[in-house]
Length: 475
Image 1 (cartoon, rainbow, N blue to C red):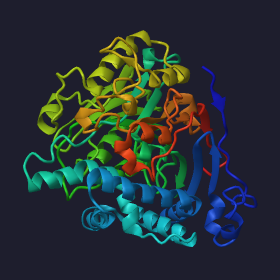
Image 2: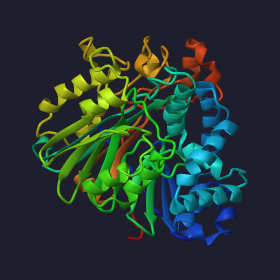
Image 3: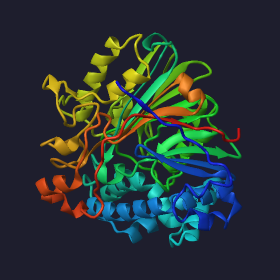
């Protein structure tokens, strides 16, 4: 496999904003908070460094990514209206009454800083808009189904989709005996084509964080993250999950807090489980570089279970392993072999024994690009591969509520190793992990039932694997 390298650089004070965009010099002189921030672009990724107090980090975020945040907000307004049937004013009202009260002082200051940065660039958004952006998955996949269920029994079930394929390995499973972690983000292409930010955040409190995400979000969203305490984090969502506590702390707040403040696997489990609202019920995969230990956490609202090892591997493909959680909090049928989750779980079970003692970054890339359909016994571009292409699948993904040929699937992939993570680096590929392109115009011509997405569905062009490495920032 040929892997292309790039270096994430932090620009010197005098040249920083000239490289940000053509209008950069104008607003560079307006606020010295931008002196500690930087933006660079490489192979489909936008690499961003933020540093300082919460309000400073937010201001830098809003300033450096203003056009991308504006685009993300407009995209989500159209996408959620078409897919969930709710307009932006309704979602803002939910944000105000359900999510804002649980935001906390630190992250409220950061979001208000994003708003200030946006307004400095001429965009008139407010904190509620940014909260909707951060909570959009919780709103669409958990809050709205729970609301529908309260209004009419049975109408809100089976709405939480399964997204992502992932693995974490250590000990005898890896080439050097140290941790290797990989993840591919699955989501609708309208949103996933914009999931291109590689964050490097150095807050004044807590640990430095490196993660991927959407512009405007204060946490990864697909939860691929590593921090300065040597904690590695990723996850896959649990399909068919039901349950939402309106009074609980939002997942986007807990996930950001866990990435920023966890110093151990126990810390991570505690932070994610405290005052949970149940949203984004996940199978979490976590590693600790200090102890070379990895863990898997099935986390629901009522039930949770933790597995740990210093010699083995854990995988994720949107299935819960804990029987109590599976039976008590999901509508998923594990006996159905035709589901995406069942097929990918079997594929992981086939691959892991073959990979014993071999897993490194390069093999991790190959695993995430795997297309084997275990039901058909051959590689296919559909929902059954670890690299998903639901847009090519005539069945769609019924257990997620996806219609035939729904434009979604794997939209990015990331792999890191213990050595890379120590230097805050990872390999990333924007677009399908296999490199297959997606042509929006050609797709809509062939599948006119999705023309309601025409204003925001866009191409995903093939990109190389890129080494995203941070550097020259304060410790």
